[in-house]
Length: 69
Image (cartoon, rainbow, N blue to C red):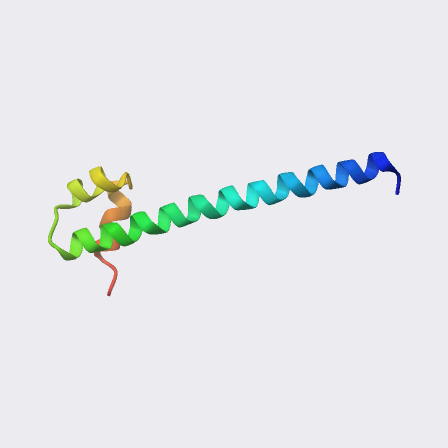
């Protein structure tokens, strides 16, 4: 493998790693919103307010409200 090919491989690996980290962070943020929504619903907060404060779609909040604990 030449130097050029090695550089391409390193750059592709770096880009893949960065994309994976970003995707993992997004997933973690989404899961935190879901957990917050569950807590808000458990405290009796209205669906539209939960959607407003979490940024999740109302449909998602409605489906969370129907989930068993």
